[in-house]
Length: 265
Image 1 (tube, helix red, strand yellow):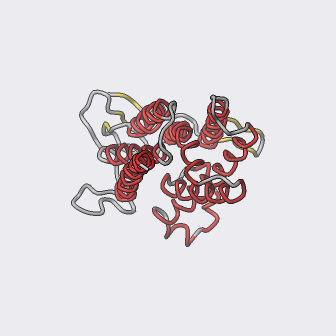
Image 2: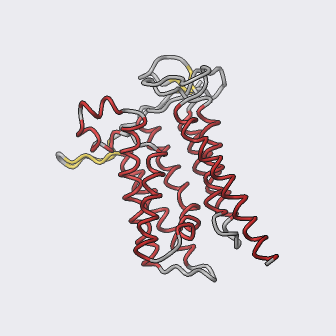
Image 3: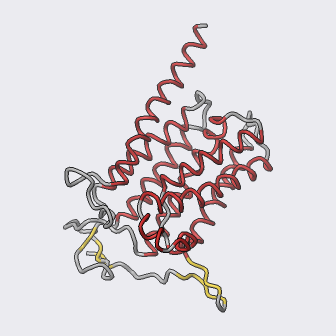
């Protein structure tokens, strides 16, 4: 069995200022997405300039932070938020919801689309392959914080989180880092390297993220405030991911059908 290494969540202390690893992971995610966006902008046929890439990453970053924190308070921690409203500002302690962040990004894309006169899915298809970098970095932040641990297991790679109990558990944060970060990035980066129908890249992101999240939730300890929502297996994360898959499939089929119709026309 493996032992959780108990990493200090504070990366650097400068007097009263404390820089947390969790916050640094978000910085790494945004910078990584910005750098990859610049690479995509340099590809032949791209109509993105470096300044436009910087602007869209800024919009997305605001959407992720505000949406992620607001989503967490609404989906997972509403009673605590109502008692301690200022707790919503403690981003460095964790407590960010992907699904809330996704909604925030959708609003950010809509605003960017309005101000910069680009279509919604033109922007979505451009940034979708960049997102897994931030997802992967965020899961490393979860691991450093020692949160979102998995259910008990007898697998040889089971990890003991001694601040939880002394039972071997799935290191589900690392599973998510691998699937949501590395695998999802590889799939989307390769798929988007060639011209694809508008909306198809965004659709693929929704399908695969939702699928990976549902699979990992099967070995991740459910949120204690909710537990299982139904059938002793359905979690809040799975419930929120199901519409993503459905909408992604509809979007993917529609994108390809639209291409066929245009060719026939």
